[in-house]
Image (cartoon, rainbow, N blue to C red; front, side, top):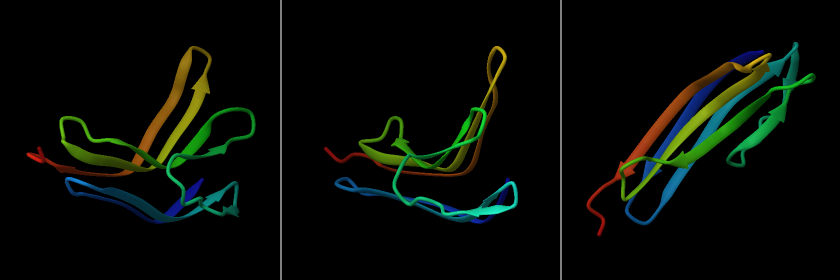
Length: 97
C-alpha cells in the first residue's frame, strides 16, 4: 500500500462540524479511487479493510470532530493484528450553551 499527499482537515463551530481528507492511494501497485464520503471502507482481499475519512465526535466538546484520514485494520489469529491510523485532525468548540 502506498499513500501520498495525505491531508486530514477538521473544522468545528458551535453549530457545524466539517471534516475532509485528500490523498492518493495505491494497493498492490494499482491506483485506488479514494472515496470522499465519511467512514468509507475499502476491503482487503482475504480480510481486513481500510476506512477512509473516518469521522467521530470529539470527546468532551460541545461540538467537535475527529477525522482519521486512513484507518487500517487487518485481523490476526487472536483479534486485531494490525490497527493503524494515519493522518488525524481534531477540532472542537466549547462553551456553546
